[in-house]
Image (cartoon, rainbow, N blue to C red; front, side, top):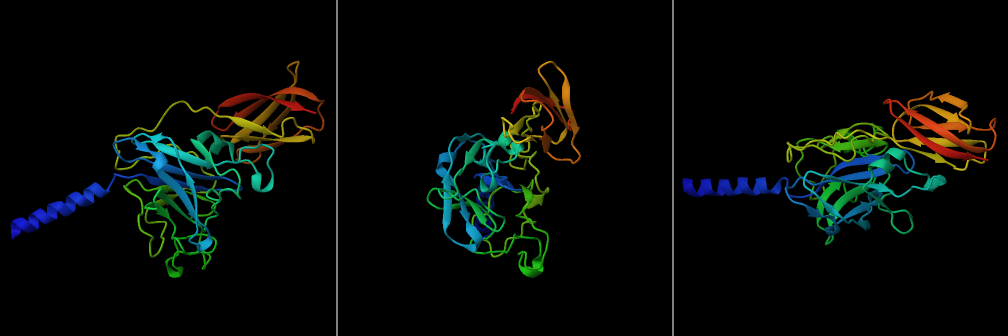
Length: 308
């Protein structure tokens, strides 16, 4: 009898162990200002995984209607795949405003450029997000399908982790990273969604963790430590209304504009710790200019802009 019980226990332990580290899960969730939306998918297994067998799904505002978008490519062991809202037009306004340059730099793919064609990447903090197999099997769930938490899910136990009591938002205007010891996704719709159980909150507009994830499934994996290269974008370009915006992949410390004979015609420091700046050009002549963008991490990038 003892031998039978021991065998059953061994089988249970083996089954539990097998259930860990054997399937993809969502390792990072980004909901920022404007169209800044991103999700990071992590492969904790020891084999490459075909992403075309999976889909991302949004269940909006407590609804159960799936807005799904398929994936592609192959994800190697201990690697991440970053998907970002496909808003890359520097001239976009309103609902089509360009996403932050840091998200553009971090993306492996861009999804859902048109809202009326696919609504998956337009999650607003109160939408359940899932990673599913193509047959609808849940691989991971963020939030609770069928529940509208109000503005967002929170850590408020008295109000069922909803925003009804005015608690700090966790799934809106925030970046969440899966905790180090989480080894698999949530595969059944939870009774309550308590974001603090499996997620760490690292604040709004935080994008520098995208593209890498470390956890106990792959404890020996090494973060990519290649030298960081920053980039920036100007819009509109050409600048025709007496100003243009600079958006960078890092906090901008200052911007310098140089004319065709090497004279500095504008030198402006950034008064706030942000990755964008508005540059007024009303007092300089039309033409092509060199723009040096200096970042807070002591890197620099140089690009051209046309001013009319």
